[in-house]
Image (cartoon, rainbow, N blue to C red; front, side, top):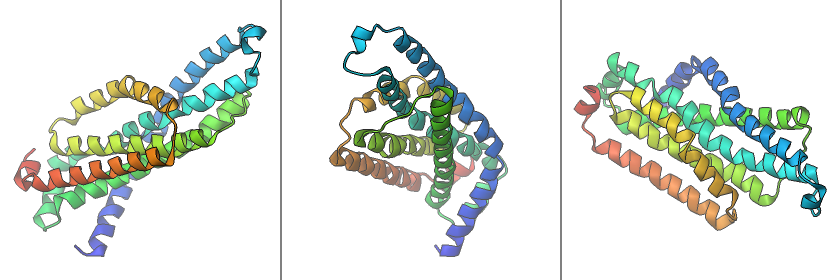
Amino acid sequence: MSKSIVQALIWREFIEGKKHFLIMLYYIPVLLFINFFTLFELFKNIELMDNNETANITLDALKSFYAVNQMFFIAPMMIPLISVIFLSRLASERSEKSISVLMAIQIKPQLIWATKTFTANCFSGISYLISCVIYFLVIKFGFGVTMVFTIDNVVGVFFVSPIIGLTISVILALLYWVIKNPGILSILVSVFSVSGVWFLSMRLQNMNMSIELSLLILAVSCIVFLICLKIIALIPNEYIANL
């Protein structure tokens, strides 16, 4: 497959993805609101704590601790949900027969899927970075809290947590590729984001983010991607075209 075809596919996906930019911007404050509401309640409780309960730690340090830990929730929620906005276009592209046309000119299904997944993850990754900037500004100027990061926090929030979010979106991309009705999947994603992801993020906060653990999570993510590619290669083109 020539390099120009790959570039053309990626460029096409980015052009189509830009049309969903406003929808993406709508989701960012909605998802961040969940974090801010939780922090507001936590900070309120911290202010009511007796001084004896915080003898070894200042209230500002305690607020910083909770503000940083709350960031573990952003990537696993933000990245899959933003990716879904772009992946849900698969249904309309099937009805328009654009995917069938691409496969008819001998473009491999796994390449089509990979470019769509790559584009969705690029947009969701950008959304995550925008979310982090908004989060910092609101915490600093809205709540008056200066966040202090440890090495574990930095690795967990800006490396491990996004990788987990991207891995989830890769699995969702596979499901969107093989499921006829993406509406049902979108509902399941929303439910998962407010339940399973919450539990996952709580676990991440308590982990020691060592280099070995980070590389292991990255390796698992790469393996998941390769397995998805293999599954797509095994699915007959006729099945995808007739969904």
